Image 1 (tube, rainbow, N blue to C red):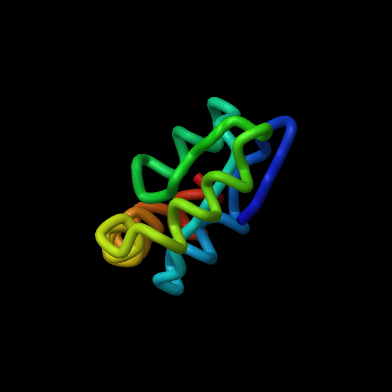
Image 2 (cartoon, rainbow, N blue to C red):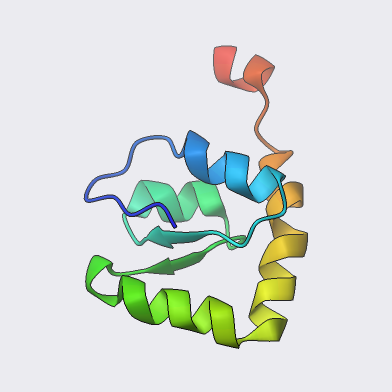
Length: 82
């Protein structure tokens, strides 16, 4: 879980996704864009519900674990430098 009031780029989220960890993030537009559907994005007020959802929903957890590394692979240090 990486809550944030304002989006930065989202490198910590990408690290978690690359490791195959289900990621929960706040719904700041930049963070939703970086996650690209490979993380559960919720309003800050709903973070606890998001944690419960990931813990209790095996299908969601499995989907996030599989989608995370694929999404993270879209971001490279070379691409960031460009």
